[in-house]
Length: 277
Image: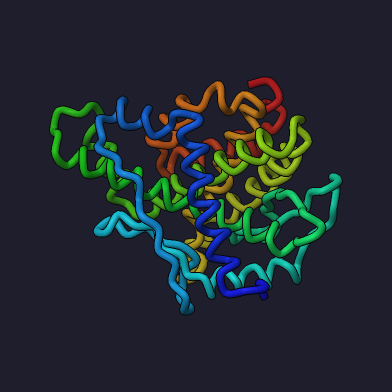
């Protein structure tokens, strides 16, 4: 447990502001507002004290990102029990996806590893929910303006909840890696995890038809496809994520399940292409 009831609240509040500072630093919100003509307003933050079935959620009616504090604490405890091996000094791995070996690297503060996990886990959730807030702003604009290019296609994507989770998961991966490498490390060793994840994703794609027949597993597929697609973006651009961030944002905005599966299969079969693309 955290030393006081307020500790986790403080981490959530701090990482919430941290995430938007990163988006401002990269000009992502301003770019989307300008290019897609949306009236984006920063969501408010609410922290629920009791247990829920979700870690974080975005409420478009209130324009609010909501955290379930007790649910997050429970998952942090589970992560502590199953920390993987260390390959790189000061780095451990947590698993936020439903693919057992799809991992995120995170920075270890040896004095407080629980806090390290909390910061990484919460930042991932925040980026995911921020993308939902972006999607809803884009959807609102599409519904009002019939002259927008590719409007019917984009409405189809955004009205499909699976595509929305896929896109949010891809965005969370990209932004998390950007934060990790640009704020904690100055080399590309962390991208090793992305390459390992892509190989796991290729095996996952082979089972996707079977997974979608399972009522429970079908619900996790959009998230996992997004995690996989995000890892491919990370491995493809590596340290040039910032340089290409607007291109990446455009890619995610037009991302759907069919395209994600096609790209995951391609790079899963040709991982060396990521070294040259």
